[in-house]
Image (cartoon, rainbow, N blue to C red):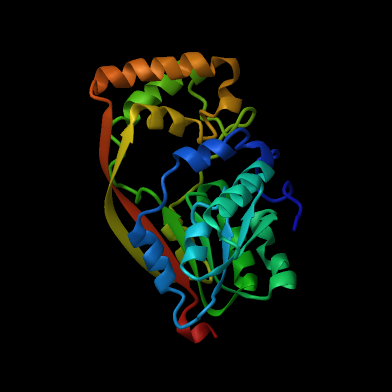
Length: 280
């Protein structure tokens, strides 16, 4: 299933932002904490086979987990490379209940022509790339009455980042300059206002929020590989500077932590929005 992937994102090359990130994303991005996935699954209610729309799906990091929790998932993204990685990952995991769709998130309503209304929609670590009010307006046409929208973030707003984050920021400044890139040829556009604020201003204004503490541990190789999953430090963005950038990163991180073990405590957030009960 394929829709127009260019017209409504605010980025003229939206399908190229994550060029070269597909395989590294599957290898190096960590799954969402179990508390996050369980909380979203708890929103399914009594539905035995809920139909969930996962927008900005990447290679299915959340979509596959939800499918393994009994959902039928339509996974939507603009990058065919990411979707192809997701199909392969689904095969490896034996997941058969995900439909992969190249489309823009603002086209969610059009997807219902083939699928019917969705019981819920999720956006995991991708809402900041989207025209959020337009996406929520589209979801008003795509999510059934009584359904939900869940926005997931690996790090809750206002909480601490990984302790090594400033070191990597200095590396990116040295190798890529002060402009925050969104892929090889595009500048990142910082969204105005927090996700919860945007949700409350939408039709899904009845909001609940889960915050869940968790710990992550990486090896040096994993942290280096993780940088290949970000649009601002991907292989496509760095080009012929990638090897030197990664060598500099190894030296910097090894100096900070010679034993090669990188631990951090983080707090994830899930913002769930529903229509007010008197909204019908």
